[in-house]
Image (cartoon, rainbow, N blue to C red; front, side, top):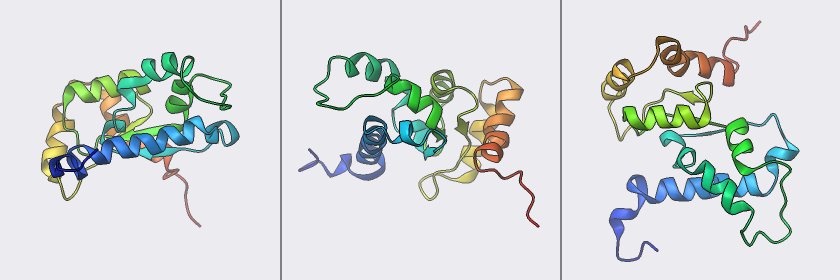
Length: 154
């Protein structure tokens, strides 16, 4: 698939597609049915998963899935068990799409170091077309909740 096209490797393309494939394998294998409280965090606005929720659900019913079954549509597990970060995608349209698809409680700010500069990512979030309550969620509150950063030690 990548032979003769080195430009497709790494951060331009292959990372997103291969990571999305791994995440879908977890969903389709029923991992999140067995472990409903598990959370997988994906970078890069969810590695294309938020854009394809409808397709996953509609094609799941007609796919060659063998004996695999799920109690809920694939999008249910993606939205419940996967959180995403903004790392590597400083696009207002992509952020709003991801938040619309996943919910504003499942998106966290992150920087794709060393591929992007921190000030680029910060300027992006500061200028994003978001309600202030959503900007605060993305900037810090979601990470505090998802990673349990509000728990006191000692």
